[in-house]
Length: 355
Image (cartoon, rainbow, N blue to C red; front, top):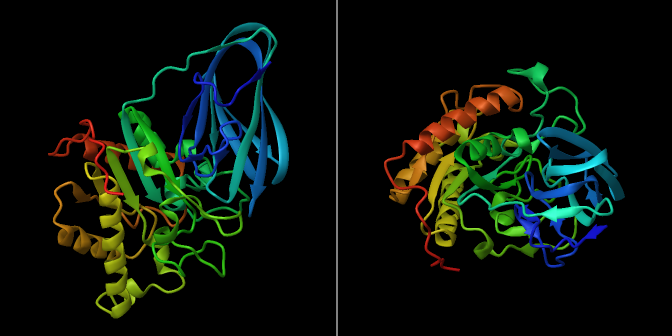
């Protein structure tokens, strides 16, 4: 039996393109569809378009994590579960990788005679992250490479479920929107994303579609999700192709970066007047001058609800991407910091955004 993808008993999370409610499109990591049902079989049909790597999707099915490789271009039928007898099931289907691919859910089908159940309320707490590959959970499952450079990979180790942000959100009982893209810098023209265009976070942050190889851009409606906490973890990739913040931290380029970073944080503040905004990087190795630049901007902003957060091993924890154990470490520190802030964090946010 086919289930309408706009059925109110389905629970979506993430920055999702729902302009066609029967064909929701997943773009960002940790984007998810949750559903509960009484039955014995569930399957999803997805259509994918990819720019690079092999593409994998994941699900938590009755508490057990699964993953599937999907066609890079075209449709894939995913049998989420298949059993002999009817019983109650809980499914969380999610996007493991960043915007190296975009995926449309075309259909959800349950075995005949199944009953779609209420999923339950979403958490009242809300977190949003703007980040790069570390925040996306890239290469997180390469468990044998803790504290080491990355192994060769084609997407099989990347899993947003083990990103520090999603781990922290689960610990805090919060819903997460993860606006992260591997290789993304702040400024256009730097970083690693889609040469020779090299879009930066200053271009992509307010969009639902932004990848230049995946079609026309589309702007996000910020009223759809108003977070209590915004975590900004951007800047490390601005050091490519040259680390000007390290070599000339008082130079013109460094000053321009600080100016653009400050302008962007002010833009975020205008979207979310009541949010706590945490400025950060990660434990992935990078020059400390980037964190010093962020500290300078934080002081200039003079906003008590904008804080600069540093991890214990900030900037020197690992030469490779963050593995699961390291993401757990970061999440624990982040959760502890949020829980001990000297300002209200989870109070109800008034809908008075300055658009």
